[in-house]
Length: 227
Image (cartoon, rainbow, N blue to C red):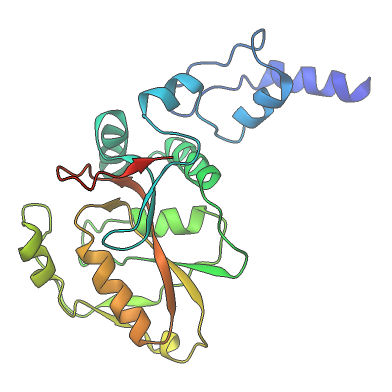
């Protein structure tokens, strides 16, 4: 009885709402388990539909095994652009909650975020994603050189721009073999992930693939599949 009263009082003081649209959850139409999950940043069903994501996210094998929350388009693209320019911790945790639910990481797997080549206005999303997923994260990579922005480059130019772009930090070279997942915010051509994988493999690591929040839709026949 006391537990019920405490829970009722907490619900009166803290009205759970969706971290994306901020709409309050309707306690009359959801069970208590759902209400409690919403307090740990689970987006509402309407927002999940607008994001066009499935419970198991997206995955593929080319050009590197990868797992993403959804396609880089529509509402998800808008949210990621907002998160880059105007970070919001509650919104970010909502996206990470969905990404974490779609992953099946092993206890012995480690995360390695892609470092930004910019010193000012650096893209901090890969580090934030890796740190928020709840698995060990290691900064095993550093940039050898500042490259051009990949945004306006075609596939061949992206590959050339990132040739020999990374090096493993000294601590990484002394580590025993560890299973790694590279972490980035968006997967486009995969040139960044391929360059990072090559560097890590040369340092003795087993790279199992890439984890990201969004995958740019492909125009060719190799369209990523929703699971």
